[in-house]
Figure 1 (cartoon, helix red, strand yellow):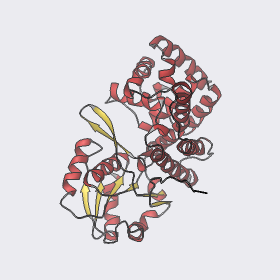
Figure 2 (figure 1 turned 90 degrees about the vertical axis):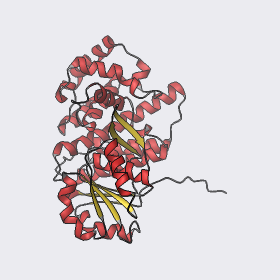
Figure 3 (figure 1 turned 135 degrees about the vertical axis):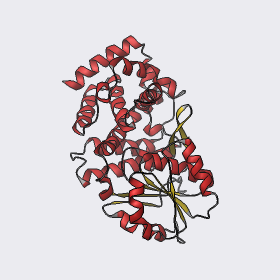
Figure 4 (figure 1 turned 30 degrees about the horizontal axis):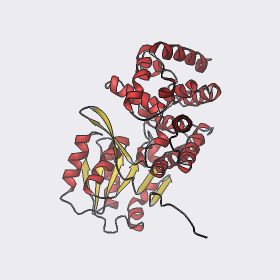
Length: 353
């Protein structure tokens, strides 16, 4: 009988362990990503630049490019600078902003990209999306996923704890995203890719149920794996649907309405996911999600990231406009500001009890 399968874009190499950066040159050569050593390495002025001195001897054929943040302009500039070189691949070395800029630039010049993460703030280390600031605020751009993911847990431990904890909010939000996707299937007939949903939900539950703290390699490794699995789930689905629901709409609304005050993406989507879960009537699950976020120092109410109740209510009301055509609990309930305010008041009492 025929064997029916599908091809899933996934990284050639995923190396998550303490000391992984000590073998960076060997990994890239052994995997035939860059046997010649001709690499364009994009770094920030922060964590990436600090590692340049350490890594440069491993990569003698590399050219290093300093990238000024995660903006569309900086990504386009990086692409223009790389056009004159003859590289095998692009390496994005740093946090999420640099990795997103490097993914976009690599796509623009037609080169494969390797993500070397120095923190675990969000799933951009493996996703087929670059989130970049532009003149209109912030945009999401479809790009090929990285062909290599390298996460050195020794480096991650040195990142600001807030940047690591934010990844926990990102991973846990998957649970709400999948619930929104399944809600859309029931209400609108939208197709759900079961494999993508299973991967994203597994990633979220692995962190929701993990007993460790960000001081433990066990949790750091599980978080890195969860973020990679989430990125692959988007490739499977062919969209960001497995990891973008009402929680992300709320986060995008906060970014658009308060561009100078928005918190870490993972902080916002974790809060948004817990509130969205409460709106779906899953109060027990919302309580568990809130307890896990609080244990890791993540916000569970808007005031903890500097937003008033009214500002949060306004963002929730505006949120569906950030993703036209996407159906989540926010579109399903279609609450007016007064009803959102009442629901949020009840939510705060629930997660604070």
